[in-house]
Image 1 (cartoon, rainbow, N blue to C red):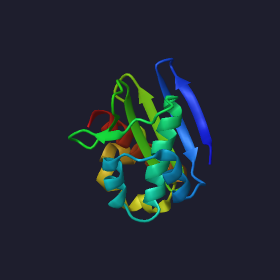
Image 2 (image 1 turned 90 degrees about the vertical axis):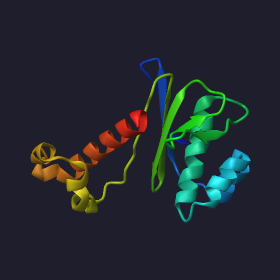
Image 3 (image 1 turned 60 degrees about the vertical axis):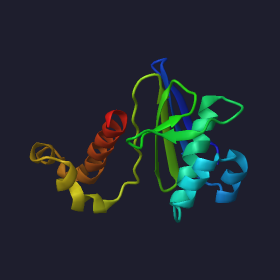
Image 4 (image 1 turned 180 degrees about the horizontal axis):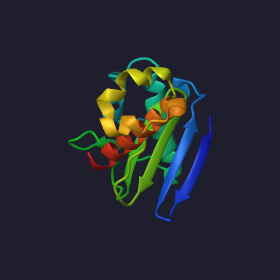
Length: 157
């Protein structure tokens, strides 16, 4: 549906969240995808299609532009807006899309909290980090570690 949250950050950036309630058809009607975006979307299956579309709608509305800029990817897969100096990062998880934009490198990650994250903790947390997990809140804390590392990876590659 509409933007769930939109905030200026430190007067040099913006962050936004979109609660996904629209259909794929709604997004397709409002986005007017560019040919290379249509080709990317054709490769995506299932619910990820709507998440992908919602992230682009969110960035467009955050930009304040009348005409939407095309999303392009650099050689590392990091998205950029064509003809824009600001850096962007997007994320989506189930019914939420997130975006951040600033004139400096940025990264964002949003995750649905799920208990199955405990199975992969050793893949993204070292022994010292694992030792610092609060046993009562370990699932939530593991998601914080994951999200922070994912956002840094997206910002700096």
